[in-house]
Structure formats: structure tokens, C-alpha cells
Image (tube, rainbow, N blue to C red; front, side, top):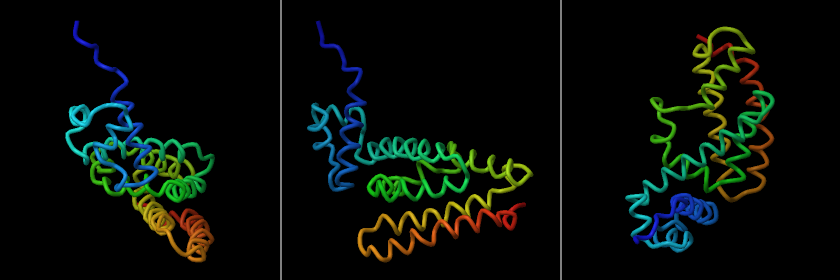
Amino acid sequence: MPPKPDSRLQERILRAAERLWAGHGEHGLTLRSVARAAGTTTPTVYKRFRSKHELQVALAQRFKAEMNEYCFSASRLEDVYRRYVTFAEENPHKYDLLWRTWTEIFHPRGPRPLRAWFLTQLAQRFGGKPEDYAEGFYAVFLISHGAATLLTVSGDDEAHSEVRKHFPRIGDKLLGNIGLFRK
């Protein structure tokens, strides 16, 4: 009787890859190290993921879902962009992977639930239709991404402190004047 396939193998592989990526970034993630950490063989990993990039995209999808869940749990719009930046700062390797694969996981033709939710919240608060606020969303996103990127670069604590101090105030002012971007 042939052995039964392990139904949890793909999840084990992804969890092992996630641990390796979170701890060491790109340098810690090889298909061989993933196989070892998942308790399987490198050819078995290749059967599930044809390349390191394919595995990275699968990981990025998980990280995107994790970040979205964290941001969706905010009680106010003001907290959404704060949480976004906090997620990046607390998970610099995960954030790095999100932006290495952004064309695949944040593509305009793909699902972007955080964007859709944020636009709906803007329309409910300020009136109009969600798509009226597309440029406003991008303004908030771009300053959030800029702050997040600066905070994920290791280095000067004083510079990080300055970004942490100014970013929320700038985000709040932008949100308070979101009508400037409304169609």
C-alpha cells in the first residue's frame, strides 16, 4: 500500500518558511533550509513551490492577510495608518517581503480589501462614494509607506523617534483635509 500524502505538509512548509523569513529575511530563506525546518526534503518543497520566488509570494500573501487583519481591528480610521506603520516596524522582514512582491499581491486588478474598506470608511465619514476618495487613500498610503519604510531601516534611534513623532500628526492632518483629494 503506497504511503498517504501528508495533508498538512504545505502548511508545515509555509510555517517553516515564515519562521525563517521573520528571523533572517531573504538570507535565511533557501528551499533547502525550509525543507529541513519543515521536516521534509528539498524535492518535496519544489513539488509545492517551483521556485524560491513562488514561495516568497505565498509567504507575502500570508503577511498581507496578517497585516490586513491587524489594520482592520482598528476602531478609527486614524488608527488604521498608525497600525500599518506599527506592523511594519515590528515586522521589518515581513514588510520587506510585502514590498518585494508588491506587483503580485497588491496589483490593482487583484483583491485589495484594506483599500476597499478604507475608501468605504472615508465615504461614510465624509460623504460621497468610496471611489471619490481614491486619491486621498493613496495620499494616506504613500505617507504611511514612507514612514514604515524609514522605520524598518535599522539605525539611528533619534531619526526613528522623529518619524514616530511626526507621522501620526501628519496623517491626522491629511485625514482631516481629505476633501482636498475628493473627486
